[in-house]
Structure formats: structure tokens, C-alpha cells
Length: 369
Ligand SMILES: Nc1ncnc2c1ncn2[C@@H]1O[C@H](COP(=O)(O)OP(=O)(O)OP(=O)(O)O)[C@@H](O)[C@H]1O
Ligand SMILES: [Mg+2]
Image 1: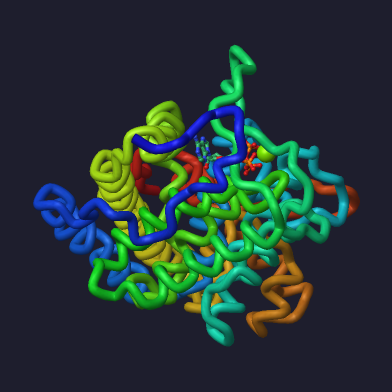
Image 2: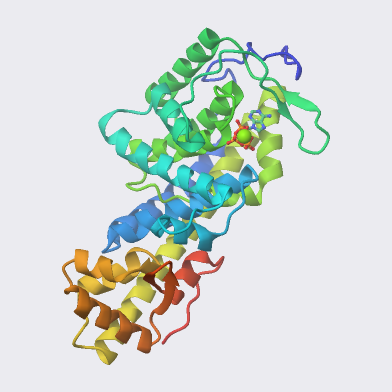
């Protein structure tokens, strides 16, 4: 059917769009569902009063799971702690790597405001993830193997020219095949990117960052808050096997349906998380207003929900009060059980346990004060 051989570089990887029909009846139906869940997420993201709540938190969850797909395992708690502050203690290697993923996503998000998604975006994203300059593979030797048996299942195309040409075809497809739904373009583009496998490492994570950037570029989201890697991690074996089946059997429909279902599930999950964060924040506002009416301000609430950790300096920076008064405020919040004080080096750090628990939990429940 095609001349694919797992052991030889797949330089015959067909360009996009493929010859087979991508938007089958099933795919279009699923697409409608995915678009509607995604637009609810977009709305939830737009409506939250303090945007930094989302920007500082959801991408960290995405970073954790996307890295874990690649067996880089850290805990959400660690991630939030070091994202807040890594001046005092150095994070372990896995946390560091996941934080770099978060930075890559963030920098990519800023960059597409100025320059549309391209091969150079992918190079920058991959370099940020790997923490050193990456370029398209120049030498052969990269192959994908089965984790347990070590058997080679796919050898990506070789030759810098070939890889660059295929990337340029992918770029054109993403930008100009506008007769196709953007979600179909994203899913097909993700397969293609992974099949080209332009780098010696970091292709999976770079491809997953590119998906989110593409959604933002297409206006389907305003912030990088879809937590798609949650679904991919939970369905990792299928992710690998469906990628391979597109190569071996042109099984595009199954692959597209898999990704679209991921968009549905993670849009719903993320929207619920955002809504829980909102209600916890409203409840906390009420509680502070009742118990500590003299110190309540919108700005103080924002500091408590910008990250699950804060310190005296954060209140000072926000112009809430001078150092001494800020310190007294935080102490009052501890007395009321809203914050917990802990020491990092010689510095006081205040944890917001209800918020941290909500961010790190699978479900979206929280207990009232
Ligand atoms: N059969 C396949 N065809 C094309 N791409 C695949 C196939 N199987 C897996 N992949 C992709 O390759 C990625 C792994 O490639 P690479 O190692 O370069 O990326 P990474 O982000 O460093 O991940 P890892 O650390 O697991 O290797 C997977 O996450 C997946 O996206
Ligand atoms: Mg790797």
C-alpha cells in the first residue's frame, strides 16, 4: 500500500493534506462537539476577573502531564513551589524540565502575537524545552523504539533539506488549508509534525506546545489553557499506536477522532476547574470580608489567587500596604486558617492550602470555611 519500512528513514512521508478525506461524517460530528466545548472554555477563560490566575496555573498542569508522557515525572506541588520561587532551593531535574516546558509554552504564546506559527517557532519551542539551542536534525540515527522491547517501530525522514521541505509543507497546510476545520488541521498537523520528527529529542513536547499555540493563533482560545496532555497521558498507548497506524494504514479517521475527543474531554475538565477556582475565590472573598473586613481588598484577594504561594513582598509590590502592615495582614490570614506560614531559607512563604489542593486535585471539589 505504501513503502513504509520501520527500519528505513521514511522520506516518502506524504505531504499534507493526505489523499484520503479527512473530514468524514464522523469527524465532522465530533468536530462540532469539540468546537462547542472549546468555546465554553474560551468564554470561561475570558470571564475570570484575574487573568493571571489561569496563566500561572493551568499551563503548569499541562507542563506536568506533557513531560510525564515522556517519563519526566514531577509533582504538581513541586512545580507550583518552584515556579513561584526557585531562588532558595534548586529543583530536581524533572521539575526543572517541566518548568522549561511551561516557559516554552509561555514564550511561544507571546511570540505568536508578533509572528505567526512557523518552523522557527518550533525550533524556539524545542530549544526552550531542552534548555539548549536545537536545530533540525542534520545526521541520521534517530528512530522510535518500543519502550519495553526496544524494537524500532518508526524511523523518521533524514536529510536537513528534506526535513525543512516537509516542515514548510506542514506550515502551509496549517495556514492555508482553511477549507478544513482548524481542529482537524491541528490534529492532522500534530501527526505530521511527529512523523517528520525534526529534532533529535523533544519532538513530542514541542508538538504538543504547537497544538496549543495553533488554537490561539486561530482564535479558538485566548490563553494557553487547554490541558490536552492530561488526556494524552491517560490514553498514552492509544496515542502511540494511533500515530503509527496513520503511517502504516492511513488510519486518519481514528487519529482525528482520538484528538477531537481529547479536546472535548479536556475542555470540559478545564472549564470545570476554572469554575471551581472562581467559586472558591468568591467564597474566600466573602469569608475575608466577614472575618477581616478591615483588611479585605480586591488586590489582596488577587494576590491570594495569583499563585498558591505568596510572601510579604507580593503584597508590597501590589501596593496593598507597607512591609510591616503586609506582614500583619498575612498573619491575620493565617490565624483565620486561610494561609499557612512556612519557611524557605530565611524567608517566610505563605501557602494557600485550599487553592493548592484544588489545583492539584483530579476533581473540582473544595470545602467551605
Ligand atoms: N509511531 C510514531 N510516529 C510518529 N511519532 C510518534 C510515534 N510514536 C510516538 N511518536 C511521537 O514521538 C514523541 C517522542 O519523541 P521525542 O523523544 O523526540 O519527544 P520527547 O518530547 O523528548 O519525548 P520522549 O522524552 O518520550 O522521547 C511522542 O511523544 C509522540 O508524540
Ligand atoms: Mg525524548
